[in-house]
Image (cartoon, rainbow, N blue to C red):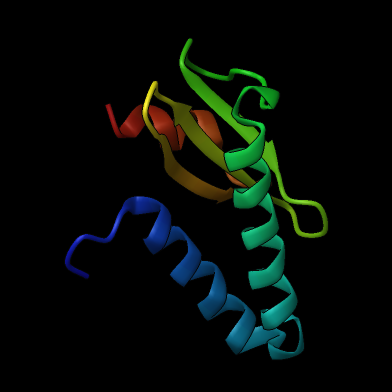
Length: 96
């Protein structure tokens, strides 16, 4: 996965779960992730900060996933896309 990010890997894991357990929801999940990222691109300051001063979060509309991102001057960095039910503070702390 040359050039892939942890967020890309998070999406692939989620897609694998949908393919294995509920393939009929896979396309709707992808659409929801795309809409979430589009919202973040259009309104980057709309996500509240969580866990760190510069880490923002936005919830998908239909699926229980949180998108964590950092708003920089020239770009938005999507850091993680995690299932809400996971132990998010522990996951984020393990990365530091």
